[in-house]
Image 1 (spheres, helix red, strand yellow):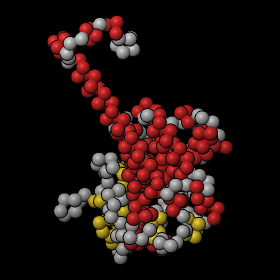
Image 2 (cartoon, helix red, strand yellow):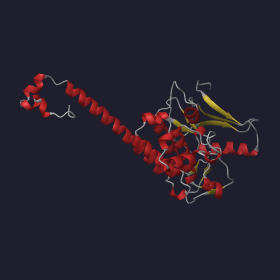
Image 3 (cartoon, one colour):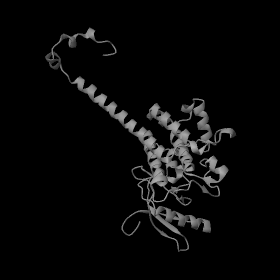
Image 4 (cartoon, helix red, strand yellow):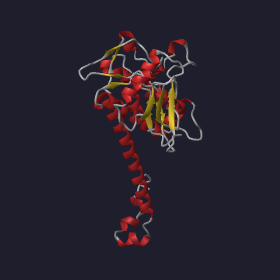
Length: 304
């Protein structure tokens, strides 16, 4: 707690090395260029002491990974929350790629690097390995690094990280949200340890429902689930050029969210209309004349 009563989070190096210190400095430089509601805010830093420190806004509800894989029965992560969180993260990545003063590749998008605030809104965190990219630059040639299960196969083979590598990482997070499973399936046979591979296989064999999280099946509309599954499949295409951009992903998720809202509004409207008809009394009916209102033979059983 600071002197003014604000609660903050302190990040410090466990092991001091030139590489780790460089990542700390890199995170300061990157976050100073970012102002987005779904990116964690850096409040200050101290790099000249024996132990380097970064000071962030405090995000109270832990990581997305904790909520997906260690599901809290008292406050479960609903289908609506999953869809909103996915949309928020996609929007933040779209901003980094297309709207920041200088394009930025995050390079380590995963569910443990997505935090949830007091209203369970997504906050993208951990920019230690992120990189600025020149506007006319299409890729970064770097030593391959990342997290097993999220690593873009194209980047692994070529050492060239592109904006579509972030798209691949996001696709894995989207699959996690749909299935509730970790990127590496330890319970499966050796052949299908990768969640991405198993997800693709399930879609090809029309067995996706066997892989989906029970809450997703219970709460989501089949049309929405199918659309998001197809979007995730496009994000993890082995050919990076065939993957959508993060801007396209964000727009697609926003459209699905809006259609879900429209569907619920229509359901509520129909319910209100139905309740209103119940309020019509005999006087109202007879005052409108015509015997057809009172002729029960005029209605089919389906109308009734």
